[in-house]
Amino acid sequence: MSAQFPAATDHDHGRQASHEVAPGEIAVGVVIGRASENFDFFVYGIASALVFPKVFFPFADPLTGALYSFAIFALAFVVRPLGTALSMQVQRRWSRGTKLTVALFMLGVATAGIAFLPGYANLGGTAIVLLALLRMLQGMAMGGSWDGLPSLLAMNAPKHKRGWYAMLGQLGAPVGFIVAAALFAYLIASLAPADFYAWGWRYPFYAAFAINVVALFARLRLVVAPEYAQEMGQRELEPVPLRELVEVKGRHVVIGAFAPLASYALFHIVTIFPLSWVLLFAQQSIVSLLWVQVLGGFLAIGGVLASGMIADRFGRIPTLGGLALAIAMFSGFAPTLLGGGELAQDAFILLGFLLLGLSYGQSSGAVTRNFGPRYRYTGAALSTDFAWLIGAAFAPLLVLWLCANFGLAFLGAYLLSGAISTFLALLVHQRIKRAEAQA
Image 1 (spheres, helix red, strand yellow):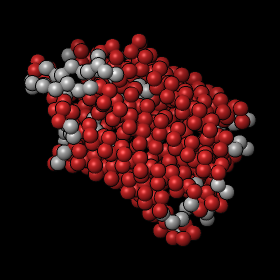
Image 2 (cartoon, one colour; image 1 turned 180 degrees about the horizontal axis):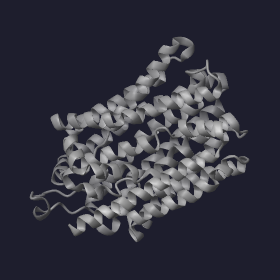
Image 3 (cartoon, helix red, strand yellow; image 1 turned 135 degrees about the vertical axis):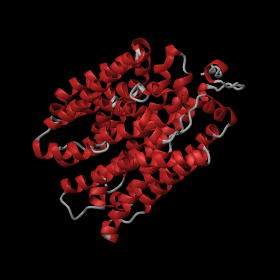
Image 4 (cartoon, one colour; image 1 turned 30 degrees about the horizontal axis):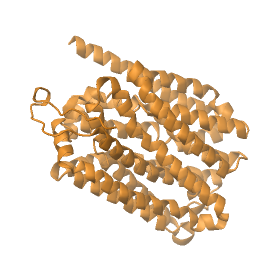
């Protein structure tokens, strides 16, 4: 990727630009950053399904322990908007580099803290409280890790390549999941169960801490470089007061939160929930399932890449709507697949990951142009936070409880609700665009 973005012009931004920014370097920074963050979160998510019910909730039956574990899993998404709000204040007072350093330091501390945290057998209820606090710290850190590089990519991308550049940042999720799932599969297969639950599960958290250190320096190298800081300023990718954002662009924050829900509803349904369901109610080996999910992760990478080409051919909004329709169709037979034998469960995983890659590739930023230059930086971050909270935070908890008590049909209902939310948000988005064009 040797081409370069053209520098902003005086006509567009009222400032003189003297540097050009290489898109290849931004893309590398975006992928490294998102992959490291997602590795952290998937390590925790997989442990929530496979480890924490036994280590932190041994007093409960397996289903109740899993539900308790998923309740704590959701806490990170609940506090994430608060992390975004506080980090924006840090950036306005100090700098983007300071904000990113603080956020990734918090993420590393929380992840390492979980790695060293004794279980319920040693600390009792205090262990659960500390796990919840560390999980919330992870969520605060994720909110603060927004660096604006995906928006910079999107705003500088050629018009006919916007879909391609938009999907680059989304590659971090399947990459992070592949590494996390493969590491857990290896440890479970290599260790005796007693050793894995005593100390083996902690190794992925140690690895996550080390990856965070590498990712921090890789991203800081970009964020604090003068040419990137200058380009961010020229593109007005700076934080604005949240009250002003809500007053001026509040409806666009809501639309931005609901537009990607078809993808976000699917996100934890094919990554975290199946591990718990199979462990509790099916006969398939967890190691086998994890390796199928690793294969699914590679399908998701292919889907993310394909989404860029599809979006550039047909448009990002039609692509998002079309994939919401595909997810709605998938919701009709997803319960039958997951409730079937091992082959059917594998088909559920692989089809789900492919749809996830195709939809997730364009789920971020499809409607953020509505914010305009001044509000795009803060608006994109906040709408993404609420999308995760509404669509994905409680998915493992809610779907596991519903399916365990009322049947797998509720799995399909949950996915269908996400698809309907996306359709409605895109319809509102189109109406607002037409109204603003006629004004």
